[in-house]
Image (cartoon, rainbow, N blue to C red; front, side, top):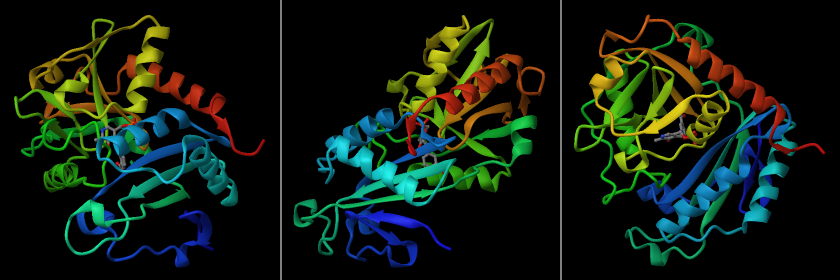
Length: 292
Ligand code: PXG
């Protein structure tokens, strides 16, 4: 049995959920998206994800066909229609169908679809053992070219980095910005732990302002850890006590080496484990209810 997909105002079986081959989301990667999680019959940080979606759309001058309230409702309805307790939700807005030229002004109606399914990004064993990460040659997009703050359908920057990580046999790739400072991994933000403080690159280093990143900052404050946003080099990661990545799909995943340099003890650290525990507690308690 397939999923029910929300497509332009209707719930349709996945086999019937089709978009035009002239859709500029497909032809040019012209569109925006969000990846959202549902836990325990609730949708986690829905408002935060939707704010980012509207901001991404604004930056590319794309009008989301539904207002905030109606879009929120459509997402809840889609999760409910698929009877999901734990879910991974993909919300996609594209420029819509146009002609073969790239001019977005010729695309009159944006396409909106919502997929509510499930995901497991990494096998469980990687959360226990930690990831080996390599630095990739592909630099993170320049802020004044395609801003990393826009969660656009144009993910080739990150996909090229992921290909390099795959080729090196590593679970993730660390991307530097054009100045050589650490930005983020291909679909996750990065943190280090050192002397009871957390460090993460600032948004201006070319990172997506992750929803999970922001929650980790709150968790850290709640357990008495200082959070410092500053430019970081690979050296800062080699010599950290602990390192972890954050993202909606990955949640919080420990990193135990970078470019074969063992980080800390080479095992997931105590602070990382503590934050993972707090995070998993919050995700089970909070969120927009789907079934009430
Ligand atoms: N950086 C980038 C470049 C991302 O795409 C994050 C950080 C983490 O942000 P959140 O808000 O999720 O904490 C993301 C989001 C995947 C996948 O399958 C990952 C994302 C999006 C879509 C797919 O790995 N990550």
